Each structure stands twice: as structure tokens, then as C-alpha cells.
Length: 133
Length: 335
Ligand SMILES: Nc1nc2c(ncn2[C@@H]2O[C@H](COP(=O)(O)OP(=O)(O)O)[C@@H](O)[C@H]2O)c(=O)[nH]1
Ligand SMILES: [Mg+2]
Image (cartoon, rainbow over all chains, first blue to last red; front, top):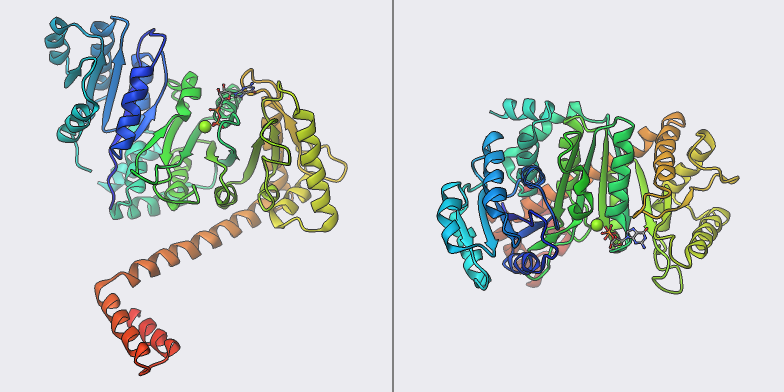
């Protein structure tokens, strides 16, 4: 029985480009994962619904616009509302060091700043999956 | 436990549906009981297969079809199949990008699947995924697959209506539709008709369909379409009853309602002509064969059968047995 790791790569907010998200999507694919890529300007509601329908193990969000303190916790809130507690949620993009403790307390498992080697993210996902089937 | 899952799926619970599809996709043997229990609750959905070359606008077309079906009040599920990387086994599944308008619509369920080494593109996992969505109550189920050779033909095995998408400008001769693929189409779409050359592609497709009709080389499925055209208004207005060829601009939605009408007309025609059952019979027959083939293949891999195969092979090489005798022995050992 083959178990594939499925990851939703999403760009919440109003950022105009998704180069960073595409780089991570390709890296995850090259690591053997199945990446569901949803494109730009996703609302937290769209991200959560897509994550549930696609039954992903991990939601990886990238944000540059500075709205992370609102959008990331909102995703966690919606997941909780829908009683989903087994999806690993991580974030990346341009996020000030000082915001990280707040985001982690909201339930984001880890924040990866610009320039993080993709291998670090891949290893983190593999090591922190919340379910094994 | 499995009763709860079945009830969850039947009541449209997103998590129950999504997890079950994953377990099917992962080949989890524990899922067989659930798929079996769901079977009696299936058969209501109209299953529509959409295939064509990469970048021809299939996902964009699906997005607009979903919108059109939602306006008519139908619940819709989409299964979008894309190839896995043969090197890493990973995949980037990007069809949802075009369908985000429906992401929060409770009446729409979208699921992306990777082929996972299934060259055909349409695996047994896809068939059972369609069953789950059917049992969950989605009344239109659209399967998008990339047309690369065999996969276009495979999709016939699970769809009631096949839509073949082509586009202008892919090459000189009829790029979009190869011989042996043409014949499975019930509805032909020429997308990106905002571009030069769309009319020429329409003429080429019509020409090929007419030739196939005249030569009598049209295989059963297109003939079914032929019978349908005579039976149902709204499917095809071709005087010879050939399948419709429709120009669209999926990006703006132009022509998409005509595609929907043709799909619905085709299904109605299958019903009226008594051909829906014939089509499904052929598909289930094919599925049964493939289930048995899979089981036999698994049996051949069993340890005792493997070592017996080795032993018998040696006997054949040593001329102590002939290959047919050895095969008889092996079949007997497999029970
Ligand atoms: N010019 C034009 N572009 C289109 C049309 N339909 C889709 N596209 C574009 O074609 C590209 C591929 O579309 P997509 O739906 O992803 O194709 P798929 O790979 O067949 O699913 C996208 O950039 C679409 O915006 C159309 O009718 N006309
Ligand atoms: Mg597509």
C-alpha cells in the first residue's frame, strides 16, 4: 500500500505574483509529494475547503503582502470550526521575526522565511505529519 | 465504523468523502467493504469525461460547465486527473486554479488525482472515486484527463458521455484527434475559437467523422452516438446523425451552454434509445475483467506461487516439462 504525502500550496491575500509558491511546489513534487496548486488570491475559506476536499496532509501558505497576522490565524480558525485537527499548517514568505510567536500560538506549525532551503521545508513536513494513514 | 463512513458519504460529509477517496487512491485494502456497500447507491449520476491535449482549456471549460450546471440546480463533482512524474512519483496538480470560483460552493466537490504510474490515466482508483461521489449524491460528475494516447480511450470505460476538446494551431494535420481516439467522442469541442483556424479544425473533424461513417469503420461507441442523434432532439442537428462539433471560447464562457445542451441531449438520447444500459454493461464487463486480472497478477506474486514458478521454469529449461504443462501445473497451484 503506497502512501503519498499530499500538500496544498496556496497563496492567500492579494499578492500579485506566486514565484515563491511555485518554487516550493516544484521542490515538493521533486521530493515525491503530490502538490495541489490553487494559484493566487485565495481566501481562507477557499483554502480550507480545498484542503478538506483534497484531503491533504499539509497546507503550505505563502504570503508577501503583510496580511499574515490576519489570514493565517483565520485559516486555523476555520479548520477548527470544521473539526479538522490532523492537517499540518505551515507558512512562508516575508514575515517579520516578531510576528512568529503569535502565528505559532495561533496553530501555524512553522514559519519559513525567504531563502530557507527547500530541503528544510520538505524535511519538516515529513517529520511533522499529523496522521499516518 | 465502516457503517459510519458509508452514512457520512451518503449525507455528503466532505471529510468522509475525501478520506475515502484517499484510501482508495492509496490502495488501502480496508476500503473494499465501503466501496461494496456504496454500490447499491450509485448509478444515478451522469458521468461526463472530458479529454484533450494539455493546455487546450479543459479545466477552464470544466469551470464554466460547473457554473452552468449549478445554475440549473445540479450538484456537481469534478475529478481532475494529471500525470505523476515518472522520476519522482510526485505531481503538481493545477486544475483547481481555473475552478476556484466554486471552491466554497457546498454543491460542488473538486478532487485532483495523480495517475500514480497508471499510464492509462484512468485507473481503477478513478472508477471507485466516481462511485463514492455518485453515492454522495452528486448528479453530474465530470472527469478531466489529459489526452495522451491511451488515456483518451480509457476514459470511455467510466463515462456516459465523452467530450473531446481540440484547439486550433497545434499543427498542420489533425493534431488534436488521432485515429482510434476520434471514435470515442460523443461531443466535439473546438476551444480557443477566438484564435485563427477554428473553422478549419471544425471542418477537419466533421470530415473525419463523415469518412468514418461512410467507411463503416466507426466502432460501437460512436455508433451509439449515431443512434442517439436520431433518437434525441437537442443532441445533434447533423442530417446524418453525426456527433455535434461545437466552437467555444472557454475563457469567456462562449459556447459552453451549447456544450452542456449537447451533453444533456446525448444522455437523454442514450436513455431513449436504450443505449445507456448497453454502454454501462460494456464498461462493467471491462471492469470485471480488469479486477480479475489484477487479482491474478497479485496471486502470481504470492511467495509460494513465485517459488513454484521458478522451479517449473527450471524444469522447462531442462526439458523435463514443456511450457504448457508447466502452466497447467501453475494454474492448478493457484486454485
Ligand atoms: N485564447 C484562449 N485561451 C483560453 C481559452 N480557454 C482557456 N484558455 C487558456 O488556456 C490556458 C490553459 O487552460 P487550461 O484550462 O488550464 O487547459 P487544460 O490544460 O486543458 O486544462 C489558460 O491560460 C487558459 O486561460 C480560450 O477559449 N481562448
Ligand atoms: Mg487542466
